[in-house]
Length: 131
Image (cartoon, rainbow, N blue to C red):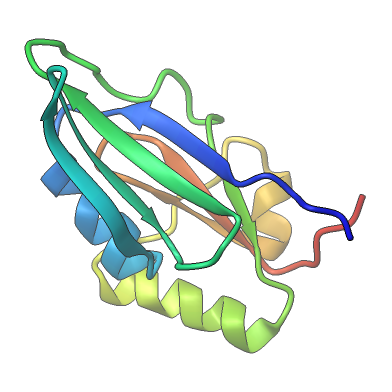
């Protein structure tokens, strides 16, 4: 039996609460954990219970994180079933987020790209993951 590691992708933000509607309501992630003033940091972890990945957003007291450095810093979520993919796109739109043109036009062929309040982008790709 192969055991795969759990992946945590962490990044800073200036406003944790502004990100919650995008990742919780739009992408449908659950708040898995939160912390406040842990050595000068506040944070929230979002994902799906039992999934082998989650996203962590942190805010350092007295530090400005700023916006995304480029439009091509992005995670891609592969949803091969058209119904599941369409439901994810519909959920993003219902949460008030419109698709944007991808920096790399490849992602527009079978996916939709959405931008969070910090300028970071997420692709919802209607394809199976293949290596």
